[in-house]
Image 1 (tube, helix red, strand yellow):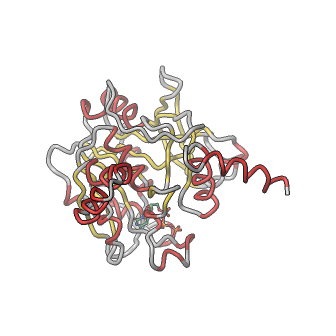
Image 2: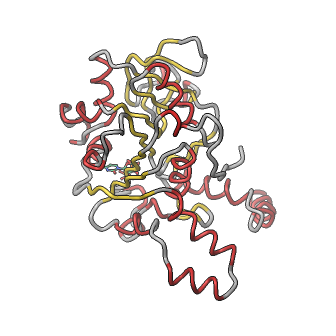
Length: 307
Ligand code: UTP
């Protein structure tokens, strides 16, 4: 699987069918990356030279989103600052004739309009998403949520999810088909088939089941197309595991109330940037196809692995 970094809005792009606003929750503590996350938000760690959150913002823009609401916490201002233009830096690069670097630093500010919502305390993903509700506009009948530590490759699944929402309405999630023996770390969907083998109707969800108890082999990924009704459910759920408000509890409540929820099964790759092991894999995967660093790295890795 080659990492995809394309930014394009192809035919059938989701903008035509409704993704205007994307929410990226980035207010977590990043404990798995301590001690570094004492000072640097994990969302800004570079995968080769570009932070994960830029890849996710590119994916949202490619899917047609015009606005990105980044949920940050006090002390994580650098995440939103990353999307601000830097006129002095740009001028210096221009003067020095560094055109390639100039193009790179201009990508993030040019992708889409970025605004922030503040989550004062890390009370869970559901709570983080609810913090972005005041940023929504009346036209936002549904919003995309992208977890910045989950790279879903190749990009494009949001567009397919928007197509499924256009057909069935409601909320659409993204799933990976995982070998049953490896299913335990994931949230797993209880599903029934539709006429499309890659689209399932969701009847429920189980967090981190033992392989024999998993209702399917379809595991949740960090891409959501949430009907606005989810914000109502987020107000009605009670804190779950660890005192946190879980997004999956709000979705489960809606399913129980008859709300339509489907998953699109993404047949591709993913990288979990949220832990050092997954992050290193992503960095190596992206570096191997980098024209500047790839050839040397490949050579070095071969020798190093044989040692
Ligand atoms: P994670 O659980 O992967 O991130 O949440 P975390 O809590 O920062 O990481 P660890 O477990 O302590 O290492 C997925 C995404 O949701 C955001 C995180 O920033 C991450 O991007 N999140 C999580 C919030 O914005 N607020 C929360 O209260 C929890």
